[in-house]
Length: 369
Image (cartoon, rainbow, N blue to C red; front, side, top):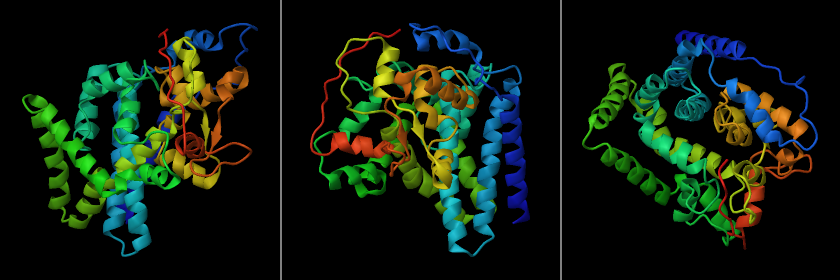
C-alpha cells in the first residue's frame, strides 16, 4: 500500500504544478460595453488561453500523472481485502479513463501543447487505442469538425448516436432511465463490442492496427507479468466494456440541451447559448461527479463550446466571467446530475422533461461564425 500511496502523492503533485502554472484570475476583467456581442468580444481576448510554452512538457505529463493515479488504484485493489476499497478502485479507474478521454479531447482541439502531432500520437497510444476508441484524427473529424459546427442539428454525430439508440423524445419514464443506463444492459454491451470491432476494422490495413494491438498487448502483459489477474479483469476489462462507456454516455447526454427547440437561423455561438447549459455540481457528491464523470473542464462544457481552444485550466474562470457578463449564458443553468437544487433542475431532469411523453425535434440550420 506504500507504493500505491507514493504514486498517488506524486500524481497529485504533478497535477498541482500544472494547475499552478496555468492559474488565471479573470474576476477583474472589465465588462464589455453595452450592446457588444459578448462572446465575440471575449473570443478575441481568449485566443491566448490555449497552451503556454512549458506545455511542451506539461501537456504530455498529463498522461503521466493520470497513469500514476491508475497504478495507485491497481496497487490498492491488489493489496487490500476490503470489498469497499476494491469497488472504489474500479470507480476511480473509470474516472481516470474519463480523464484520459478529456485530455485527448484537448489534444484533438490542439490546446494540450505546442506539438499537436506529438500529442496526437501520445493520445492514440495512451488512450484511444488501449481504451478501444477511434484513432485521434478520426476523432478530430467527428468531434471538432462535425459536432462543434452542428451541435444539436440534424447530422450532428453526437445526436445521431442518440437517435440510433432510440434515445429520442416520446419515451416513457422507464424507457428514459433504461436509456440513461443503457451501457450496463445486454444491448449496451453488444453495442460496445460492435464499437470496438468497428475501430479495429477502421484501422485494418494501416499502421494504426499494429499500434492499437501493441498498446492493448502491452497493458495486458503488464497486468499478467505482475500476477494481477483480477486487476486485469476489474480495472481494465470491466472499465473498457461497462463502467467507462456508462460514464461517457451520461456525460454525452447531459452536457447539451438535446432536442430543445431553436428555430431561428442565428449565428452559431447564439445557438450554443440556447442549446447549451452551464452545469454546476455542488457539494461533496457534486465534486465526485465533476472530477470523475466530467473531468478536465468537461463540466464547463458551454464555456468550452463557445471558446473551444481554451485549455481546461481556464474554463472555470471563463465560466464565471460569462455568468457575470452574459445573461444569456446562465439562462439554462442546471445544478447536479440527477437531483436539482436552488430552484434549478438537474442536467438529466431537464432532459427527461423533453424526452418523456413528447418533445420537439425542430432544429433549424445555423450559420457558422
